[in-house]
Length: 480
Image (cartoon, rainbow, N blue to C red; front, side, top):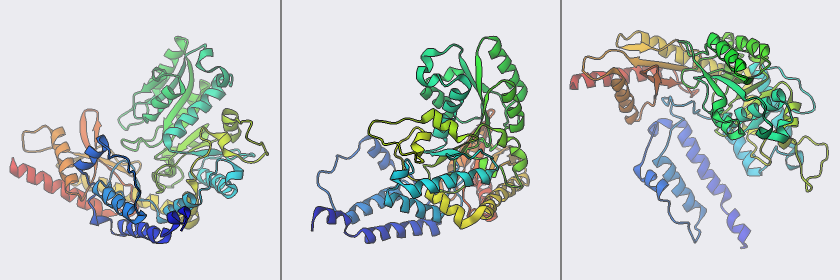
């Protein structure tokens, strides 16, 4: 047996073991707690084991890996996991990821993966159609897939810089700056914007965080006042960002109004729809997304409510050729063959092919099937909101726009502050292993935040959550 055969032996056997583990975790998710933590893992993170000097059989490594994973496991397949929009992936998307990784194709360059490139371009087009975002399809796709929403937002900001401030920025950078550029975002916008501005060299102080109204949407009057103030002080407003689905409550900014403001002040209009954008063309929610088609660029995270594995974001644009102008480059070792090389449209060169799983999911479900999954998630969130209103001891923050419902305990016979009671209840029900809501601090009040990430979650599951909250509250009151 030569050395290469050693590594290939038992590939099917070991692969079958992995599939069996995934099948078990997927079809019987409630056998595991919603969240399993392990103090030994924390110790190992700070004090890693020494690098192995001698190897061992793959089967042995696999067993250790499985044991370690399930000793510190966030069970996103559990129908009562309500965390940070971390989805239960569709089986077909997992299979697609496995096939793409196993064959090690990349859509970075045509000659490194012709089919991968073609499928990626097609998936980008489908994603634009799915959310109702029209693009001018040319010789290049209408966007680019990224590692996640943060990189998509960073790419959008670079694109805004190059187009609005001038493409000389690509050569001169911040050293040629004449007027301090300014970006506008609501206080409920994603933190990745500030990080991206730091990363791009603008500095975080060029970000203006605008207050929101009681629904969590950007306050338009406050935005106008801030823009005019910045212009008066000699600053250059160059990018306005609307949030279509805030991480906290799922609120969607008034996109059509923001589009008009961006036009009035010659700004790039970017919509960060990483979470909520997939609801833009759903009949039940499309009214909240009026104006998304007016955006110069849109961020979408398929690894949220399109139910594919993590590691996949997307930036859609009106003009894909603008991305080429912003990122095109080459080297003496690279032979230009006038092929569709997607590395010319974004920062990464060779990258993992993540779009096959989404392409297969679109093929498998169709747009109608996908919309039914989204509609089901929304209906569960609305049902939960209705259930909250039936309890005098509970308070609903607001009616859900997207499948995110926030509520709190509003009265309690004991002496503890209500914020502490809500924190205690969240911790108690999470430790039971049966439910995992998160906490939200909204204007000084602590709420339980429930995001319906799992297409398997139904009315019974959220009814069980309310019953568990009520029973824990009763138990706490009895103990007091």
